[in-house]
Amino acid sequence: INVYQSYGPSGQYTHEFDGDEEFYVDLEKKETVWRLPMFSTFASFDPQGALRNLAIVKQNLNIMIKR
Image 1 (cartoon, one colour):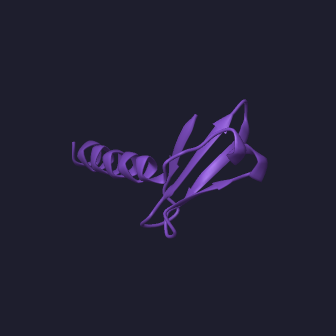
Image 2 (cartoon, helix red, strand yellow; image 1 turned 60 degrees about the vertical axis):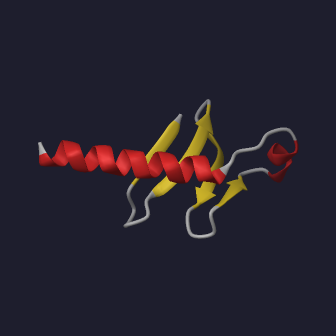
């Protein structure tokens, strides 16, 4: 599950599996932060993908609010 929550102007991007957070993207540092460092040894996530998705979601949300 990808979750976008707006805790301020930048929001938050997390990725969960089976109810547990796997990682989140630090939007200020623009880097992936793994809940357990060992996860990064067998998986990767490009934080630019999260930043791109957040920009799209924010734009879509603004359109929906205006309707």
